[in-house]
Length: 138
Picture (cartoon, rainbow, N blue to C red):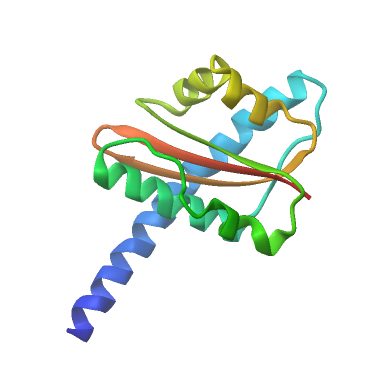
């Protein structure tokens, strides 16, 4: 039983490490968008990114998009005055960003000047990328 738990944890860590370049690409794409609108760039929160990655993994496993039920608890340690979340799925990261920018709520999260920090989780599964971005002031 212990061996199985260790193997599962090891696979999860490896899978998460494989997704880090995708996370960094999403950060680059979103910061490029913010610079194009004369806004400060996001600073990445690693702990919150892990939380976002777990959510992206859950969405991929269930093969459907849904928002984080416990988002308040996830951001509370950072004492934000405001926060938001974008979730998306597409074949490519650039397509996820395009879809977000063509949706008023998602676009508002990306371009909200008060949001300075972000957690990003990306999982590649089922032939697509599943992305969670959690924004907050701070």
